[in-house]
Length: 224
Image 1: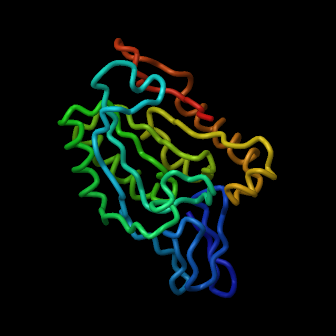
Image 2: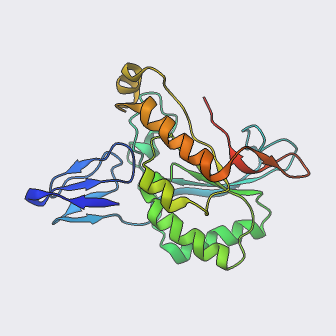
């Protein structure tokens, strides 16, 4: 998910921002970095992983007891001035390091505790490791739906990596006016890039499919 350029620079392709990083620099997500002409992405840095008994998003919490297993990562490829999780996305929270094996175990453990889905919050900049963990977890019996919960600023390369591993895509579409996207989230060309990503998500999972209880098990749901 990156290319090498002259002068030891790297171009990251994890998200639609496509950060250009000189040696020693970090990308906008604060996680992916250039170390001696090599892309360094320390896997893990999860800020929280828990069953949430009050998940309120439509079609996920439609009856008492519906639980989403939320995995929130540290860092973000956005710079929203209104972020409710600023300490996690842009601040000092460092999170807990996890490799693929440990994250796989967490997925399976939460399924055994009755989670109705695995809700990946802001997974874009860790998508390589999350994809590997999902493959391992599915091979070991993970059957509950996997939800990819992002700001919509995802690259085609990342979405291709997640294809077949995600059951429900739940992207934001925060802005139609790119002037506002730049002002409030430092996200140039947001509408064009996010809509392109959302169309690819739709191609992968299609329209919503609900289980017998009315909870979404597959499909696309665009927020905001």
